Length: 148
Image (cartoon, rainbow, N blue to C red; front, side, top):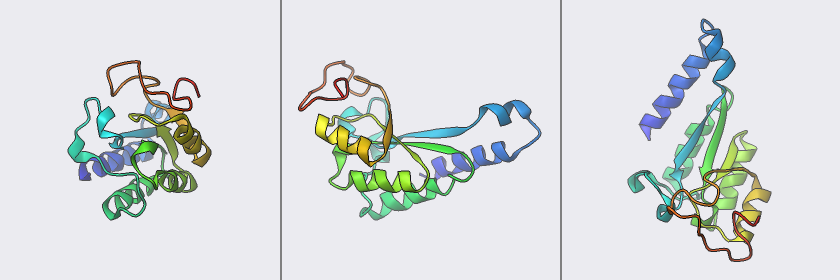
């Protein structure tokens, strides 16, 4: 996780460098995609770097807050699989309240779980309809990603 934090520090330094006008006008933020996803939908991501989206999980919540500390400097979109924890909605609300943006992807939510995640603050979809499962076919209980 230190590599991600180092990367974010580098983005911050690049944005603060006022000598490159092109960089200043194009670099607006980052996407943290692989940490809080469903391992069954991981695609090329390494499971050993995945954490549950749960504010009660100390390592996960500490890392999240270290990432969110960069919100004053640039936009941060964080992918969260709302189907991976009973506390994922609290996790999403915390990101939103802290000024981050929540993406939903690499997951298998039911329609109800997806609707609840959007109501909690999710505003972006990653890999609509496929991605991690190498297929466009996902279960659609009460609607799903494509039907919502």
